[in-house]
Image (cartoon, rainbow, N blue to C red; front, side):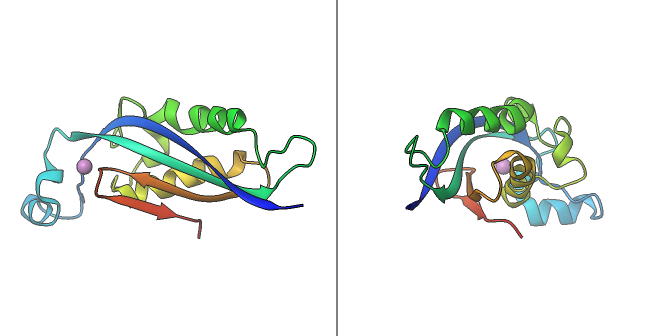
Length: 137
Ligand code: NI
């Protein structure tokens, strides 16, 4: 059998505000600059989810990408698309919604629902220039 890595790309749009409630307004403005805007701002995120595993000799798949897409929609996209990450999203509650923290949150949402041990990496692109890769602990 051969191992392979399968990646599914999905998109979502969401608003956020970078803010640390332990700091005063001045420090929040200095550290987070425009990203601290009180009413938030939006991004069109691109999410790449990679699953690793052996190619099944019967199907020729590591994972059926239709199943992978359904898991991503049910566990992540339905919760974040067209939402405000600071207020609407259960798995981001109490976290500053940087692209790093969103990537970890998405990993934790997906991991229990991907067939055993197969979630390999997620890459979350916040802009054309900025992305975060997360591979678990
Ligand atoms: Ni932003």
